[in-house]
Every structure is written in structure tokens, then in C-alpha cells.
Amino acid sequence: DIQMTQSPSSVSASVGDRVTITCRASQGIARWLAWYQQKPGKAPKLLIYPPSTLQSGVPSRFSGSGSGTDFTLTISSLQPEDFATYYCQQANSFPFTFGPGTKVDIK
Amino acid sequence: QITLKESGPTLVKPTQTLTLTCTFSGFSLSTTEVGVGWIRQPPGKALEWLALIYWDDDKRYSPSVKSRLTITKDTSKNQVVLTMTNMDPVDTATYYCAHFVYGDYYFDYWGQGTLVTVSS
Image (cartoon, one colour):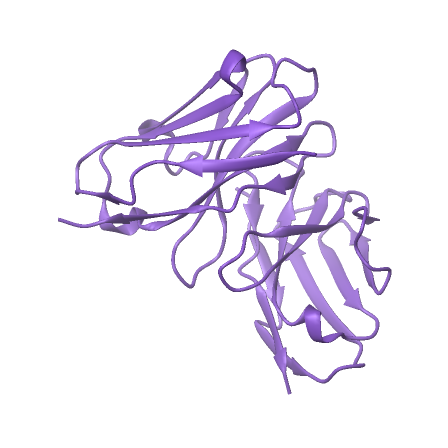
């Protein structure tokens, strides 16, 4: 199985900050990575799908990049509604695997 | 508009079999390049992919629980059913079903999830 790691596990930030989350795969996955946002008590919401494409309706302050084993999710200017947990998911091969999550909370 | 909703028991006893139903609308599982997957999330923990069924009835399972899982579809009812045998307290989680995009391999629409507790 491909193992996914994320860093940091949590980050405290203020509204307007630029936030970068890193996702690393245990082996190369080309550009087969998706990002999800999850708020407490809610289902995950797709943000970015391969290859770094913004899902319809997702604000342009979100962007994804990377290939191979290293990927990043960037929020260019954090908004109040962005405080949530973010997960990466490799889509290269079965079994699909998710990262452990990165919690973005208010500083 | 694609929607999905999970249904099933909220409480099961250890060793029992769990049966969850995903009822969806806005797409058909007889349409090519469509799939429905199941993902679970233990309280306070990360997401774990469990199973996937394609429009052509091809199926994929997570190796960690493969021996305990069965996924089936009823195209006429717009439903996908997940069965998990020999439930254990560690299987306590919120179970989600989600619409799967074949080719790009991601889940774009999710159900609200259903919390299943395994306890005697």
C-alpha cells in the first residue's frame, strides 16, 4: 500500500494568512492526488482533483501543486470558513489511501 | 444534482454483520465510468477507503478488510449495499458513501455519513 503523510499535523493561522500544507507519498504517484476539506460533523468536500484541478465552486484562493511523491495545498489568504481539517488522497493505485489530516485552526 | 445518503443500523453487537445502504440520485450506475465507494472514519481519526463498485460491476476492496466486505449494486433502485461481517468495536466509525469519478479516481460527491457503533 502507498502510505500518505501530511505536515504539519496542525497549524494555527490568522485570517489573511497564507497557509501551505504538504502531503508526501511513500512512492511515486505521478500527479494522482486529490485534496478534501472536512469541517466538524460534516462529510469531506472535494477541493482539488488530479492533476491539481480546482473543483467547480471552490474559491481560487485554494491551489494544489506537486508530482511524484511531494505535493502541496496552498490557501493564499485564509478566510474564516477555511478553518477545517484537510486530507490528501492518492489516486494512483488501489487501495486508495488518505493522509492523516492537517487541522487548520484559529490563531 | 448528485446526492447520496447512507442508511443502516446505528448500533451493532460484536461479531454481528453490518449492512449499509447508499441510496443516490442524480446519476445512474449503469452509466459508463461511474462508481460508488465506501469510506469510513473512526471518531477523531482519518479517513479510510473500504470498497468501490463500478458501473460494470467490477469491484475493489481494501486488503485490510477485504475478507469481511461485500459490495453490491441495485441499478434499478439506485442503491449500493455494503456488508461487513464479524464487526468489532474498532469498526466503530462514521461510514460514508461517495460518487466516484473513473479515470481521475476521486470522490466528488459524498453522503452525509452514518455513525455505526459496535458495542455489546
